[in-house]
Amino acid sequence: MAASRTLTTFRLPPLPTIREIIKLFRLQAVKQLSQNFLLDLRLTDKIVRKAGNLTNAYVYEVGPGPGGITRSILNASIAELLVVEKDSRFIPGLQMLSDAAPGKLRIVHGDVLTFKVERAFPESLKRQWEDDPPNVHIIGNLPFNVSTPLIIKWLENVSQRDGPFAYGRTQMTLTFQQEVAERLTASTGSRQRSRLSVMAQYLCHVRHAFTIPGRAFVPKPEVDVGVVHFTPLVRPAIEQPFKLVEKVVQSAFHFRRKYCHRGLGMLFPEAQRLESTGRLLQRADVDPTLRPTQLSVSHFGSLCDVYRKMCDEDPHLFAYNFREECKKKKCQSQEQEDDRESSRL
Image (tube, rainbow, N blue to C red):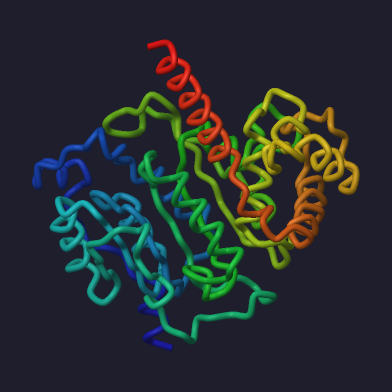
């Protein structure tokens, strides 16, 4: 009991402020890496509170930078915090935090896009997918330039129940540009509805927790920042492979202002496009004159189910790539033009 009490009452000792850390180690945000520092510990505390109860939790923080959110996590009675930081300039400041929190903070100098977090925490933390989420959390102030590819990667991990989700339905609390946060949480029919909306919402319960004004960051970004919380669903709303769902959704939103049949037609070779698109929409019972933003997750589920059957009927269909066909047509057109030019010489 004494050990448990010590674990749940830990507080960091007095330390230099984040602003002083930045001065001490001469840290500057690199614009090309979309780095923006959050210095207000009241806001970092709020981000951590939105993650839920972290008592005795194992937390994976991505992109800790100078360590603002890191401090708030360490003060949240966690069991262990693992941080992965790509920029070596931040390691000494993080090491100072590690020294102030013995046995609490592990630092990895690496890339979150390739780091194997499924091997990072004890096997005993793993839960069945149908159970409550494990006591493992992902928290991070993501650089704008990696936020979208990273969340797509993690959504694919959710669908396959691997990576951070090998432990079960691991919850995530992450920052995004406000526009991206609005897309992730946009409802059917809203102006912000996008590919990200569908890909996130068919796999997770997604909630916009709160907005941080851009002026709270150093340097100040041109946009505000949204904090978004994700909890993977016990059962995905679309029960088809991730890559198939991604292909259907990407195609639909390629012409987001046109009727949905226009984008969905990109799933099929030109020779059969009209007939196959009509068959897809008819079998899925989807109105071809709906805009992509008007399609619900249920609509996309029906479209994916029918497209899967069409791919089973034609083994070459899923490999079809609209852009490759366009490139070939462009090359053929250029060759014909070159031939005509040569015949005139």
